[in-house]
Image (tube, rainbow, N blue to C red; front, side):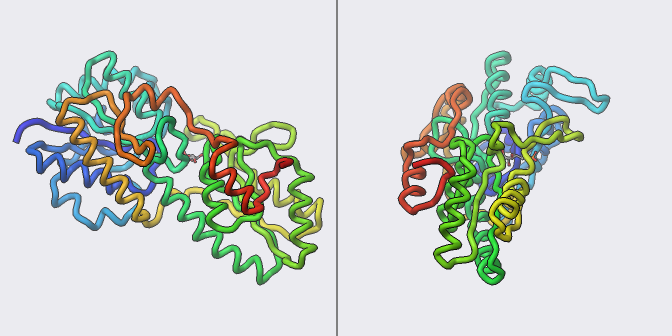
Length: 359
Ligand code: F6P
């Protein structure tokens, strides 16, 4: 056996990460490589905290679990590391030193744009050999159709809203369901379409309150006394301000309040009984869909193939329904927001789902 490939999962977790680690391990070990799995993302590389991954370690039981059995890390800026004394240090040099000390020949980073920026800097400054695998439930990475985790995130939304339809009809209530999606409406749009929502509000389309009110009124006057409103966490208030709160532990901002605001507004303005439901991190856990398991397996195997062919500085992508790869910088520099003429927007409109705008 010659050569060691490192692997870690970085950024927010999602379903399919374990399937990707498993695929990397099985393909690499059967190709004569050793695999070191770093704990808690790139942090584990800096700390040299790893477990040697063998086929036994990545048995089928991890396949059906969300999360990452290696752990994830999503704190701090992408190129800055906070040590135990709270000092900020240049991460890239620490990575490079650990990489050399451990004798790694390449690293496979399973992450989002933050992790890919670190990888890009490691490659540019220290010539480190990296291959990326994209994951994010938000599906907002540029230059690709879909990343690992999105399908399972949508599935969680659908399971939850199916349940809410039942209780909503029994009690003649509207539910305002807040879903994740940091600055992108893909989860809201796909989750709402797949669960027969009546109204879907996304950050890419500014909503007009009176249009939302008219849609709800028309549902109630038609005889149905319940409705489902799906709202992306990142929509803006009607005055354009965002619904952000400060996360005092990590010193970052996060979205909070969209469902509570809208639900209160529906009760006050329309006299319709309404309840806010914040799905939150439920969307990131649970059982990975078959689609995510297959996508993660395809990407894990392909990432090792790229590493074996020395095609470094690349990210595996599903693009135009085909697995291929792109230079890392292409995936970092472009952002994938919902396009207003996309099939998903057209489908929503075709199904008479109100998107909060005049159409
Ligand atoms: O980017 C993935 C995501 O789940 C977003 O949809 C959400 O805004 C954010 O992460 C939540 O982050 P955290 O887990 O740090 O609260």
